[in-house]
Image (cartoon, rainbow, N blue to C red; front, top):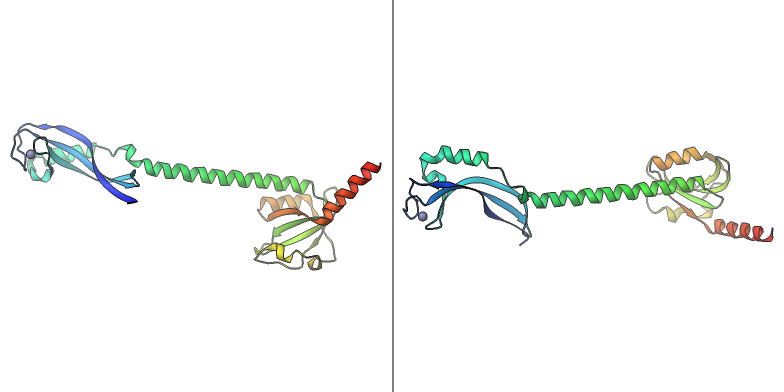
Amino acid sequence: MVYGYYYKTIKKGSTLHNDICPGCGSKGTIRLSVICRVNHYVYIPFWPSNKQTVLECSVCGGKYKSEALPHIQPKAEALQKETPYRIYHFVGLFLVLAIACLFTYMIISDNKTQIEKLHNEVEHLDEGLVINYQLPDKQKTSMYVDSVRGDSVWVRENTLSTTGKVMKINQAENYSTHPSTYLKEELHKLVDEDRIINIYITAAYVRKQIEQENESIQD
Ligand SMILES: [Zn+2]
């Protein structure tokens, strides 16, 4: 049983010395109590409901509706009104809320780290890197970085775009032969707009890095 409920006494009133139990007829053995229904999932109380006053008898152990004794109705109503639900009967709701907050926090901080990483990659762009990004119409495409001079980045745009995996259109023959220029500032703006998907390294980039390293060794 995943979901269920039980009734719980949340307030015990004083004994009604002059009244008679509607069940067993004993005198002075009943008291007014407030009970409520506790709704639970796997026995973790989630939220209470159906607050009501009942008559409890200490002799027969019975619980009776307070309407059985009409003259104590005002007292019963007052007792019910002044008795709040117990906070620990909401524990499941609080737990779910706390977990939801934690997940939201984790997603936000993960996203923030990702954005910081992309800003850093934009600052260190180099020939041979490919930027996968989203067009204003939500289609995905890419651009190949030809060269970087100062704040200017020369790229060749992919002539195709896709709603599927951008990897599938990342082929050399799809890239325009005409270079276009971006300022790094514009690329940072794309990062902030959540439009840069990732920046990845191509074989050409790796080759160039190795060549540069060899040159520096020879120097
Ligand atoms: Zn009784």
